[in-house]
Structure formats: structure tokens, C-alpha cells
Image (cartoon, rainbow, N blue to C red; front, side):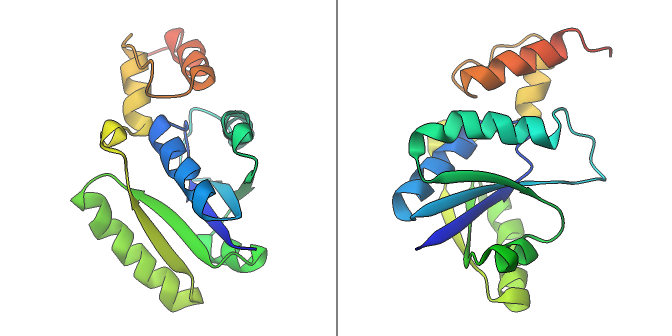
Length: 161
């Protein structure tokens, strides 16, 4: 079975993330979307909320599994026997950072990294940008799944400044 991991914080998942996940699901037998537990970062949604939202919006793919992990992605890959990491690239700046990470991951654990160019329709998306736009009353319809949009509005509309 050919398996790949798509790691990230996904706070929240965007249509750009889903573009990469869905394309990977056509190339691999199983795609594991691994939500990073980062104890040093204040997230809008809990890890469990993010796992639940991703599971909901990827259930149609059939070969996508959602998990959570703490630590290095390559350690997770070793534990789960996953030889490949897939990463979406939005811009040259992403490539520079991701290339360095890919080389380190290969050096540490022999894990390969597959880079996918993000669909230009979603190249400007980031989770932090989506949160900021919603926080100030902007419309992000079509940029995140409907369930994520609803939860962002609920969480941020009545949030104190």
C-alpha cells in the first residue's frame, strides 16, 4: 500500500489544503492528514476540533485518514511506516523553506517529500489570512469549506479584541 502524510496545523483547513489532499488521494492508496499538536502556539481551534473538521470535509475521498501528532513529522512517519510527506507550495518563499525541511527530513529519516504546486485559485490562501478576514467581517465564502466558514464566524464574531 502506498501511503503519504500531509502534515500541518490546519487552523483551520482551507480549500488550498483540500486541493493538495484531494490530489494526493488520487496518487496514493492512503493519505494521512496529520494535525500537529504545537504546545507553543495559541490556536483558534483545538486539535480535536481541527481533526473533526478535516474528517468531515474529507470523508468523500474514502482513502483519507485524519490523525494528530506531537513532535517531528519524520518521527511520526517512522512510527506509522509512511515513507513520503506531501507539501503544497504557494510561492517561491514556500519552496525555500520547504526545501530545507525536505532535505533535513531525508537526512534524519530517509523520508521523501513530494512538492505539489498549489492551484493558482488558492495560491494566496493561508489559515491566518482567513481568520483575519473573518475577524473584521470579510467574506471568505468559497475559500474554506462551508462548515469551517460557519465555525470561523461563530468563533470570531463575538471574540473580544
